[in-house]
Amino acid sequence: MAKPTLQQKLAILSDAAKYDASCASSGGERRSSRDGKGVGSTTGSGICHAYAPDGRCISLLKIPMTNFCIYDCAYCVNRVSSNVERARFTPEEVVTLTLEFYRRNYIEGLFLSSGIIRSPDDTMADMVRIVRSLRKEHGFRGYIHLKTIPDASPHLIEEAGRHADRLSINVELPTDAAVKSYAPEKNPDQIRRAMADVRLLKEAGRERSHTGKRPPRFAPAGQSTQMIVGADGANDATILKTSTRLCAGYKLKRVYYSAFSPIPDASATLPLIQPPLMREHRLYQADWLMRFYGFEAGEITAARPDGNLDLGLDPKLAWALAHRELFPVDVNRAGREMLLRVPGFGTRTVGRILATRRHRSLRWEDVQRMGANMKSARAFITLPGWRARDLDAADLAARFAPPPEQLALF
Image: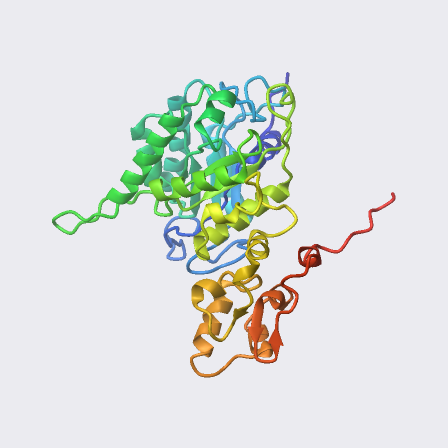
């Protein structure tokens, strides 16, 4: 059998990486090679889709080092028992691909994960070798996100954090029971210990010595984790509560959700729970409400008896419809906390409302110019010349449903 070419490996492994969530790069250090030293940049070059000082979307080369794996996690397409085409990059090939893709202006960084080959330490050692070579030998200053292996030796994870901008360690599933059922070779306690180690190393990296000298940098963009949703029977309330606990306990940048999709041979071992991508989208919306709008996980999921989010309505609108007694809100009098709970009002709109109404009373046209989605807000607010009249209407929720679409016949 002919040995696969680098291009063939890239085709196989880039497809295998599609189940790895999180390409975020916000929070990374600002580094540039415009001074003539090194190669790459974390800011303002290449095919960056958006640029902001506090959050950047940077195009990354997203590949696993290999999709061979000695583990047999029931939800993973790359598990040892899965009948998929396999490939493996050498560390030198990953380094070459990263540098060549950057020079061609395709990417600005690297997102590297891997299946487990031989042992966790052997695999992690190869990944560390890749990032060390990029940083030390080639002076690469672009963004690097490394998906680490919790069973690897702590000193390998520590060295990885010295070179990578962000580390992530997957918690895999929302509950320990689910991990033990569907990924029996993985230990939830060991995963949490590894996450705790990363947090401690990150915090130690901020402390100056008694001489004022800073310790070596460690994962300046912090750590994140990925959770598979829908592979087990956990409801959205459980998922959001677990995410909240993880973020608070390990100072995570965030939890990334990955909707489980049926994969070859999985039907025999996994329950027939196949949430659409819309469930993943609703979880991200709920997470956003918790991070920036003051919502608690329990109140977002309390509207339905099964503890799941409504797939037909965004979580903020669903909450407002379930708490109509709190509305309508007087835009000229309500506090910030209540304004943030009005459907159609974002954080920027609320900030503009609070700043402007110190000087004058606001009208419909003013709020609309501030960026509010008045189609969503109109049923929940009061303004001079406008008062919501339909809060008690039985069909109010149906009015927010998307219009029906004609399906294609051919």
